[in-house]
Length: 557
Image (cartoon, rainbow, N blue to C red; front, top):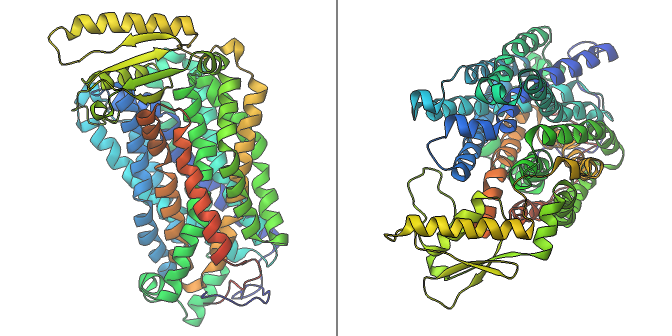
């Protein structure tokens, strides 16, 4: 490990150590600015269903939603590149100026999303422009987190880094919480019809106000004392990218930080805060306003635990808390999401139990139900059957048919034979098939939407709270641990890359990957295998190869 001293040490300040009041100002300014930046980024995820209709209306609804999630994931895909660009600048010219630039890029990109014409107005240019703006957002966020975390940690006294940097960790949840509150407020004020038509733009446009506040706050900050000391002593890195990634000693720590920390942290985080929301609205058919309120309530209850686990990590260590969160998540995700189904849409849970749906088909005629560009046609009997069930949000299992090319759906004891969508009489066959399928599903009790009167809101919030609690365990201490893994002169660059590959790639692609798995398999819980597998991977690698960092001297260059 590059920074290995275990003796506690105070930061080497260029003059007098900062006062408690000054440190509190740093935490407030860094955290508040980052809240606004996460607000900008999360608006897209919270409005994914509306955005799919506004910008991807040229494809079928299932593909449109997955395509919208891909556009959401595009912002995550470029975050590591933003980490490289802005991490290098942060180690060369300073933490403060770099993460001031990132927030301007983020805020401006988000504001412009609110002005974009829809697909119906300008065609394919609309989603192209949207993706360009998402890429700019991702680049900016790639430089934001490392700057804020490094900045606060380099101000914090020894023994308080976990607690102080945990305030940065609350910003992602608070940003999501703020975005949900504003979305709900605008929706209630305008009504659902107006909101889905044009009102969804207002939360994006409001980012201009938040941008102004954030810039004003950050302009009042001084550079971090550790960076000032490095600058004074001439110890800044001249080639932070080379020192971070071309020297094996540091590159090894980068890889361990990625696979032994941030990959598992990312999938636990995005499952608890994003996939749970998508699962409620897209799979369980809970209306978006109710789902947002339920998630917001769980976030409100869970957010203080970022500070709790951050402070606890100063006492017992970062590693045991983070890995315990991964272990608990991997062990309990399946029963927790089954509980969500039971409490949020009991009719669906009951129908699955009493009248399970099975697609019996020749597997050679079955395709993956994922067509984001809208060019493929699912016309085989198997594809027709699965497409019909996916469009209705009905979970199913698969069974092989001995009949070559044939397919049928069983709903309990009822059998509905599928048809060849390319046959001359396909139109007449489709009408008969869909009529039989709808009747069978209705008799079996499969609901078109979750019944608001039957949602057990208390239990749903409790399940969501447990998911958020796992998030606080893996995310609360991680900023301090990442800061402590790397020497000061290349810290911004080195910690940013594994964080953003983990969160941008392993986490950012989670909703898209999980829903594609569900669409292919039919099992509404199949997508959970992705976060479970990654969490177990991190648990094993982190437990074997990473050591505790809480007592490391972070002032070393």
